[in-house]
Amino acid sequence: MMRTRVKICGITRVEDAHSAVDSGTDAIGLVFHPDSPRFVALDQARGIAAEVAPFVSVVGLFVNAAPASIQEVLDTVPLALLQFHGQESNAECRRFGLPFIKSVAMKPGVELHGQVDAYPDAAGLLLDAWQPQVHGGGGEPFDWGLVPERFPLPLILAGGLAPGNVATAIRRVRPYAVDVSSGVESSKGIKSADKISAFMKGVTGCGTETSC
Image 1 (cartoon, rainbow, N blue to C red):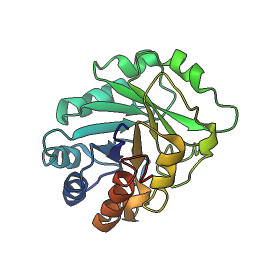
Image 2: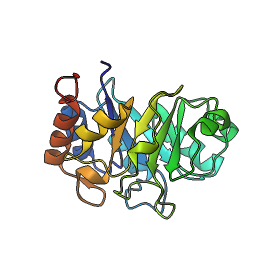
Image 3: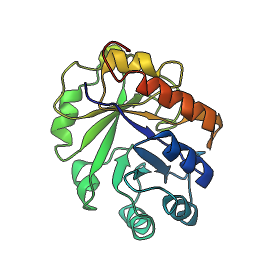
Image 4: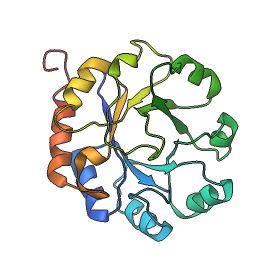
């Protein structure tokens, strides 16, 4: 069985990046959406990225950002992957020459295969709860039954994941990766090393069919 990858999103402090990396995460997420409580300024983001160990990807999250604003981030912070949470088109997502994933707000009636057609260059789709007022990070799960069993792109499961439910989520959905933010926080934007560790134990406990 393929290992489930993990991204810890909404990192705002160097020490939280260290906790995530030390726990074995595959990626950390930096939020460049000014309305988010997890927003990081350029100097802050650059300092965090500089402390991330090799082979851990740094992902930049954007919501309907101006191209010049995204380019300013790219000129300052060494991002490996872009994550778009707004109404960006495929052309707008791909114009920066980096791999990207596109967030999809999961609600009844959403047509995931249509999203594949709309974003043919996406490296994967991130499935999140439908909370347009916060654009992710709201800590609410969605109906996992909406996720198809087979899909042509890697699926990243987000939305309301936490140490107590991530094993069940992986067992139910079998995603390529899971993405957590508020579920491992002690307060908004501040990660808990203990919760990160517990979350990772929940993920790694699903490493085989017999244990999950």
